[in-house]
Amino acid sequence: MSQLTELLHRNREFAAAVDPARLAMSSREQLPERILVVLTCLDPRVEPAGFLGLRTGEAGVLRNAGGRVDDRVAEDIAYLAARFGLRIDVAVVHHTQCGTGMLSEPAFRHDFADRTGLSDRELAARAVTDPTETVRMDVAKLLGHPLLSADGLGSVSGHVLRLETGLVETVVNAADPARSAI
Ligand SMILES: [Zn+2]
Image (cartoon, rainbow, N blue to C red; front, side, top):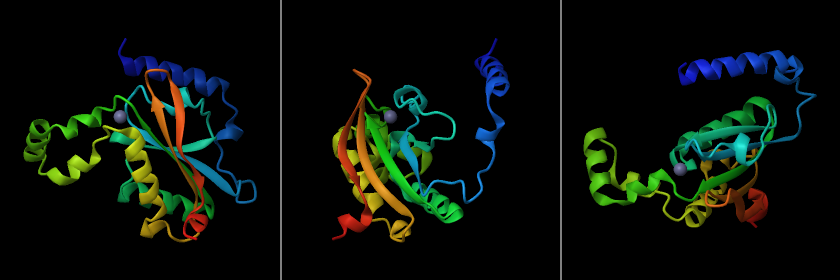
């Protein structure tokens, strides 16, 4: 049985147990004023349903290599805020042992940049070797992003998931952009 066959089997169990009301599109009146988006790494060990116990309908999840803030992430958050007229609280979660750390090794990075045509400098900036440092940088980047300077962005917080223990450590407490600008 392939891995996908097993996952589709689990889907049948999910469909049999789920309350369809949880999956229905909420009307504007039913929506909360704010919703949470978790931005984190695509590493299979870094699964928000696992380490945060996220359940269906509780939060949006954005994932990319490293859980890094880039223009695409900002666009998605801006869209979500505009589409539903909500404020979006964002929790940025980086982690220890991140595979993007390889991008800090020049030989690997140069070779990858040559093969893909991507910018060596931009690839170097994507490496998460010190998650405490990169999560601080990315919270600041979101708070200052031009697409999110309007009223769509709620609070932004920064966290590190330590894979050695499974614990999440808060590095930057939730701050609203309006407050941080004062
Ligand atoms: Zn990672």
